[in-house]
Image (cartoon, rainbow, N blue to C red; front, side, top):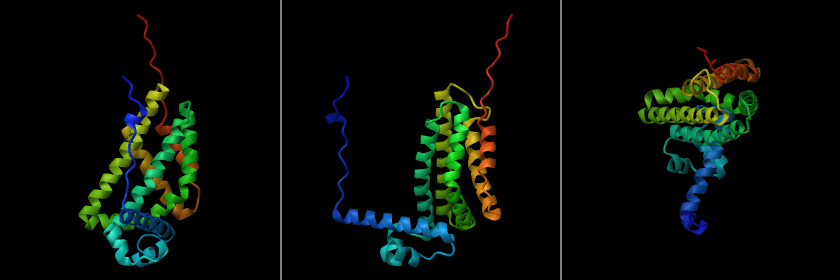
Length: 218
């Protein structure tokens, strides 16, 4: 029996004034860190600068909100992917046939190019931190697994929606798509060229549907 809207409605979470202030402070610091890390890279940005840009907060306030500088970087990474995932899902959902998926991914890549370059600037520092910080390594590994799983689910969903099977299995295609995106972003950072065409052709190969099976006659 269907339930009424009133019986299924979820009550909004009510925060105390102190909790709202903490959430706002965290949001401002996160936005400031994302901007500074993207502009100058991770190593050249101090937590004092992040706090100042966020609204005049002290380094202590930044530590209180995120723990360590590495934790702040990982929080920026996770926050960034939440928006990326939504945009990617929307782009793929609009596709009516496999060719449309490649076009949608090309548009999405063009829009994400500068962000990809920004993360390429920070990647060496992130990897160096993860090498010596076990907690950071585990968190980064968990995030990468989450990203791969999210893209795998999107591709699997598209197979069902479009009634096709890709020649490359979704888990493999997801891993290769992520590697391609970051690899081309590094290349673009070095030579300044727009890699969208290369990314598009790579996705065209990864997302090629299997040809229909031919029926054999006896």
